[in-house]
Image (cartoon, rainbow, N blue to C red; front, side):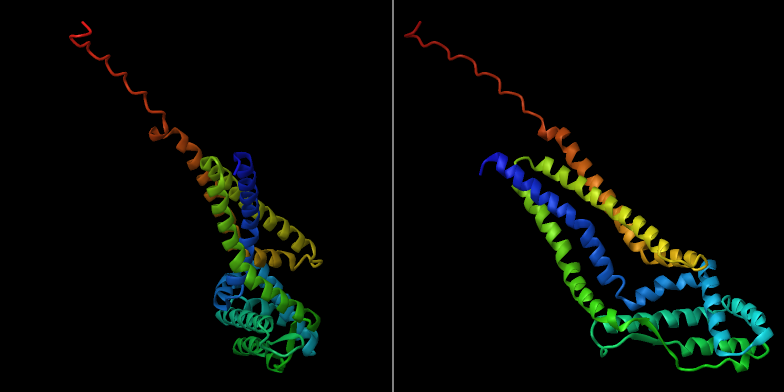
Length: 294
């Protein structure tokens, strides 16, 4: 194969490999990170003590209690009690229970374990924890707070089928995209006429992919928060977004560091002593003349 054609094909394979790197990292994070209930609950657990999240939860719980019970002038007092409740151990346990229940419900719907219809979560256990805490603190009218098995919709029925299709595609992409990226990179380096240059280009491409992934996360955060009209809940949404994408941000920086290290190492190999031209062998002495020639 001509050298020019080999280099062109190698460059195409390496470019395609580097293009797949951020998409493969994103798919693997979503398929293996977000779909693990235990990991999701552990990721969300520290947010229970985040001031913005606590304020948003207290506001939502206070609104829910006021809608279900005619508290009258006691409404502000109950809201203060709910804010105090968000600093208790019972609240943190309820936070974990609510996140686990929500994640389980969405995951079951994505895997097709439930029949068609909206994805709902029964938050009665969480409300019961709030009521018991308020009763133990001798809050007036706390016993009047109703605890009913009201199922809260977290995903409309029209989006369930789309979620299932997306989950099926995600499972396939999370395995094949990273594998394809590795295969293409190896093939591109092996095909190149100068493998050192191909390895350097691959490292730079991986670093660029990591930088693009970090940029995508920053833009995603901006547009996600811009779509929340409520200024009160925006800081809480920012805290949740940052917690969920911590692993992906770390991955983007690792890709950037790995790519730059690979490119720098490949570039420095040109200066290794073993790659210098070996000196020309010394010329052999002329043959001594024979007696007949003399």
